Length: 123
Image (cartoon, rainbow, N blue to C red; front, side, top):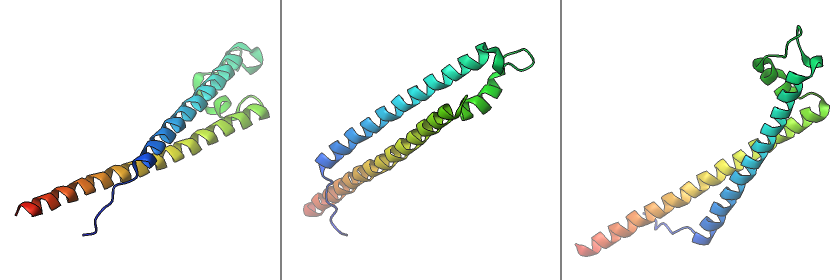
């Protein structure tokens, strides 16, 4: 069996830091999205021009329409951009998590090989 080499620990530390930064960026984008959605909800539940039959629209209708399309083109673009940013960052984070797991498994294989080699010396 080929001798497995340990991954570079400096690379692992940099990757862990990158993953932390990606998670922070995701949380900030999600918070921004939440604020925008709350503002939309507030607007359509307090402004009579959005009322249906004299009543504020239901939460389901707000979520299915206004939270997706916004109240105007600018909001629609802003919502789309935030969701794209969250999706890209989440994809990058998942990729980095998978790479970190590979590094961890490389360490486990190395550990097993090292133990097996030590055991062979005892025979």
